[in-house]
Figure 1 (cartoon, rainbow, N blue to C red):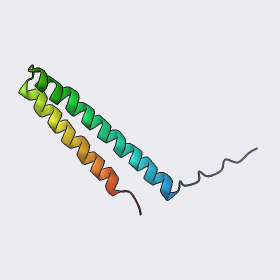
Figure 2 (figure 1 turned 60 degrees about the vertical axis):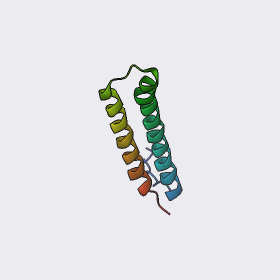
Figure 3 (figure 1 turned 45 degrees about the horizontal axis):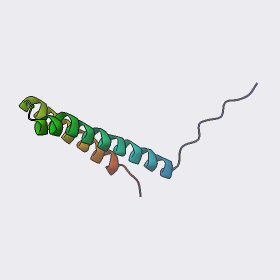
Figure 4 (figure 1 turned 180 degrees about the vertical axis):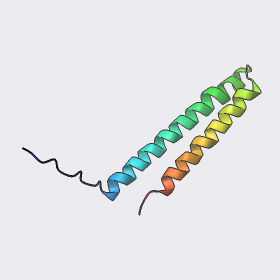
Length: 75
């Protein structure tokens, strides 16, 4: 019978890279949300104030999550 090995902990560099990848994803989603739900209808002249405000709030929330993740990056 083969014994299962204990999972090896990931290195600090690997944790940092995962955090940076998650932060990059949050940034991409926030910019895409802002452009597609906020700027594009505003530029086309067919906007509702609710959608512009919702896009701005979503942008700020995702940017907040991004900064929270990046504060956890280790030296």
